[in-house]
Length: 141
Ligand code: 5GP
Ligand code: ZN
Image (tube, rainbow, N blue to C red; front, side, top):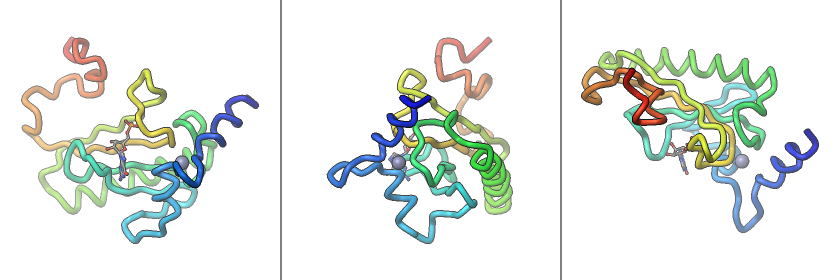
């Protein structure tokens, strides 16, 4: 436990290499939506239009470091954003909610985040299996 906390605080970055998401959290930018202990902002390289990231204000390594308040605010953020997206775009017919925890699982930014990815009919030829596609050969069953 002690090791995990120590590792997390090391990952806040330095003046030369600040954590990207810590910088966004602290930016105060208008497009960073506030959800108490969490924020949400659009992904810079979206899988689909309206792809949001839900991110703790604290620098944490991954989803499993979120405390109860952060988990609760995450659910509220996901629900709120879903409604906002559905109201804005009638072509949205589904969502993927995804979390990559650890490099092995595909995580590239070492600051916890949850992906909310709106889906539209026909956005990929065969969507069956969805998040099973993390291992492409196992997507279909
Ligand atoms: P991961 O692979 O760690 O689960 O996801 C990291 C996500 O962060 C990716 O979807 C990537 O597009 C997004 N991302 C990386 N750098 C930035 C950035 O500077 N700003 C924003 N808004 N998103 C970023
Ligand atoms: Zn950070």
